[in-house]
Structure formats: structure tokens, C-alpha cells
Length: 357
Figure (cartoon, one colour):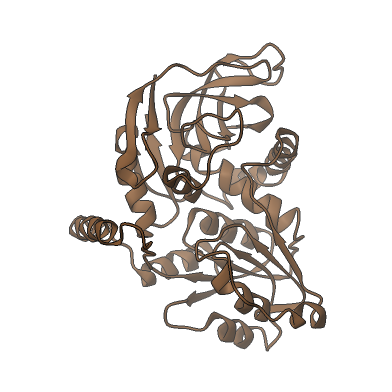
């Protein structure tokens, strides 16, 4: 089969489509013929060598996919050959075939195409397990999402609004250039962005905020021109929001704590801005705040199965009712995975990016 191989740690150019062996199917797994795989920020970190797959996982990137089951392990009872499904993966989605644990497989969401279904497993499991299962975000509360136009953000907006929550988002367009190979990376990104401008695929801050508003966000904040702490306080009569979902990390920690209401909860799911900072912790006591953080990929299969079950129970009905819809920015052939990564790292997209074998 064809799969995208990380030939060495580095930039998008290290992603190469190669012929590899078909995956072996374990007793509690199913083999999926992939219709589409969706990109996640974690894929770019794995490509750079800073986020290796868990022990026993596929070495190929790809944390979610959709497709048709073509084989089942001997202990699998729910699924059968021919079922159209989507799945949460520990890796291997960037391929023509992938093995997935049966407990991490979901039926095709009602009313969603087989390809677009690939956009749901990772974002739905991430948001539901963090914001709802752990932070207990409830109807009538307020919720701030950083990166509202991302795959996580576009899903979280819709799900929260469906459940009667007041939604705040931040959005903008920024390129974070690392120190290593700075000139080379910068030049490539500029060339890529020029190509996007010429092909009318470039999406700026105002377009991102407008998309968030259209999805249901109540308050949309341009983080490049506005102080989100001040805007949150202004819109909540000085109280702050009840829950924040953050993927920036260190640079936002103090500001996030300052933006929370009494008994507020901050959930960190990423560190795009870094991991080290200095913070005044006094507000934790004064406002009884809760600081939480978790990833998804390295959880146990048992824990993932619980999350997937809760997603099917709570999220899939919202999709069936048309309250949550897939937001797919662009699809690329599997052989153009490098271009797909360049688009993701440019941040010039809204929603999910798909790879099609």
C-alpha cells in the first residue's frame, strides 16, 4: 500500500509517499481502507521529531481517518466487513489502509459524507473529553476558545452553542518561525503564502472571525488588535468566563487565569507558544480556579474507548440533528501531504485539512 513516510525529522519536504507493507490486524482491531485522513497539529510535531508515536503505534502520521472496513480481528463483534466508519488512531492515518482498535471506531455520522467524516474523531474526542467530561462545561455558562477557526475551534463553537453555552473566541493569522533554519523556513513560507494569495486561498483574520461568527460564536476577538482579557471582562460585566480551552500555553497562562470567573476552569491542550513562563498564582486561591491539561494520543486504549463511547452518545446525535457540521477547508491527494502541512503551518485555513489516498 501507499503511505506517507517521515524520511527524517524536518520540514514538510521530508514527507514522502512510499510503498510499504500493509498493516497487520490484531485480534481486537479492524482494517480500514482509508477514504480520507485529517491533519492535526500533532502531525507537524511528529514530522519535526518532537512528538514520537506511542510504543506499538504505526510510525506513519495520521490520528484520524474515515473509510470502509475490509477485515476484522477474531475478537471484534460490533463491526463487520463493509461497514463505513471513522476512527481515532494512534498513528498511520496517512495511508491507503490502517489498523484501528475496535473500541476507537465510530459509525459514519448521519448525514455526513464518508470523506468529511474523517474531520470528526480527533476534534470530537479532544473537545468532549476535556471541556465537557473533565471541565464540566454546562448550559448557561460561558466558554472562551483560543484559535476559534481551527479544527478544534470550529467543532467546539458548534457543540457549545448546541448545548446552550455563550461562546467567546480568539482568532487571527500569525506565523511562528523557529530559530532553527530560520531563513530557509521563512523563505519557503513566504513563497507558499504568495502562491496562496495568487490562488485566492489566503484567509486573513477578519475572514476567520467572520467564519467563527457564522458558526455561532457570540463574541469574536481579534487577538492581534485587542486585549482578550479586557474584552472578556467587558462582555461579562467584569466576571470573566467559566471555561477556557487553550492551545497556546505559556504566553497565555496569566492572561487566561485573569480571564476566568470564580470557580473557572482552564484546560490546556497544546503549547504552540511555549511551555515556560512566570505566573502569579494568587488568583487560583482568590477565585477557586482549576487548571487542567491533557493530551489524547497517549491515553490508554481503555480510556480512549470510554471517550469514543461518550462521543457517540453525546456528539453524534448533534451531528444527526444538523447542529454540528464538518468544516473542511481543503483536501489534498495523499502524495501532496507536504503541501497540506505547509497550509496547516501557515495558519491560513479555517477548519480541517484532509488527505485523500
